[in-house]
Image (cartoon, rainbow, N blue to C red):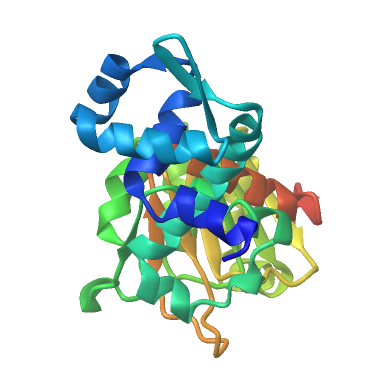
Length: 263
């Protein structure tokens, strides 16, 4: 086995070793602190420590163990990779169906920031609506930002209602979606634009994903399948890192868009 493969095996093929490295990222620890931090006994963890001392990932100083220079270089790079593994492992079937290239490359590289996610499947009675599970957190949010290349019949009344309640609402829509909105719901669009806490942006470039809603409470992501189909499934995360990721996604398309102030 090559040195590189042996190192990968040492780090990733043992939860005990992986967790120990992440624990020591915060600084040196005694064996008692390690046992307490990882909820393990002495014998099993000492066996793992010896392996990582041999691989040069740890150093021992008196009664403390800490990351070596090599370990300090490697461990920060482990975390994004482990987070990415977690995102894909928790919802493997969902992600396997999606065209991940619909996400901007710089955000796809950081998809691990979505953290713990849950797939929401539409019910027959809500097939064209937002999932009922996100309606309560949606209405308790302070800010709501959506990027969309699809049209939902509930768009106009929902966002007008949210805005009237004092919630800051910003929308980035593909040009055809905006035109349909104006054509079918012109009066509601005018009311929406007349409110001080709203923003409407039109993107002439193709928005590759179906939709993304990010609030100060959650992120809801709806993508397009590898076959180019939209199934109205939502991937939802309440992780803080997911909210930052979702805001960057919104701003990415907002920066490509034209602000609409009147129609």
